[in-house]
Amino acid sequence: MKFFVDTADTAEIQELEATGLLDGVTTNPSLIAKSGKDFKDVIAEICKITNGDVSAEVAATDFDTMIKEAQVLRAIANNVVIKLPLTFDGLKACKQLTSEGTKTNVTLCFSANQALLAAKAGATYISPFIGRLDDINLDGMELIREIRVIYDNYGFDTEILAASIRTANHVKDAAIIGADVVTVPPATLKSLVKHPLTDKGLDAFLSDWAKTGQSIL
Ligand code: E4P
Image (cartoon, rainbow, N blue to C red; front, side):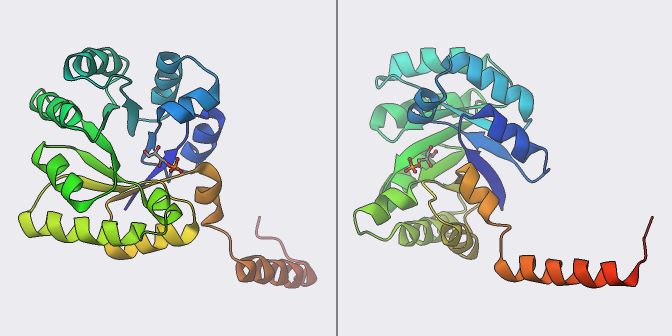
C-alpha cells in the first residue's frame, strides 16, 4: 500500500519524506489556501522535496480551461499529477490527459458508479472520500469495498486512493479492503506508529539495559 500525505505544508512533507515511508503528496484548493502560499510555487517546492506523485488540482470547471490549467501545472515538474473533479468535463479532461501520457487523480468521488466512470476515463487514481461520507452517516469504507470489487471484476488499472482519511482505523480498514493508496493528514500519519504498550515496553527495556551498565558502542 502506498502512503501519500494530504497537505500543502512543506515542513510536514519534509519531515515525513525523511522517514523514507512517503510515496507521494495530495493537495486540494483548501489545503493550498491554508498554506497561504502561491499555488504554483508551493507545488514546485513540494516536487523538489519528493520524487513521488504530487497531486495538483485544477480550479476550472469547464473542459477547455481544465486542459489549459493542466498544461501549466504539469510543466512545473515531472511528478505532478493532475487532479480533476468528478464531473463530465473532469472525466473528459481525464480521458484526454491520460491519452497524452499525463497522470490524473479524479477527486470528490462519493459513489461506486462515479469510480466506474473514472476508471473508464483512464484515471491513474480515483479518490473516494471516506470521512465526508461518514460525516453524513453513510459508510465511507463500504464505498472502498465496492470500488475494489468493481475494479477487480474488470481488471481496471486505476488505483484506489482512499481520501478524506480522519483516523488510524480508516487506514487499517482501507488496507484490509485492499485500497492501493491512502492519503493521510500529517498528524494521523504520525499517529500510526503510536501504541501505549510500545512506549511502556521500551521504557522497561531501557531501564533494565541501564542496570546492566553495558554499552553496545
Ligand atoms: C483528497 O485528495 C483530499 O485532499 C482530502 O483527502 C480531503 O479530506 P477532508 O475531507 O478531510 O478535507
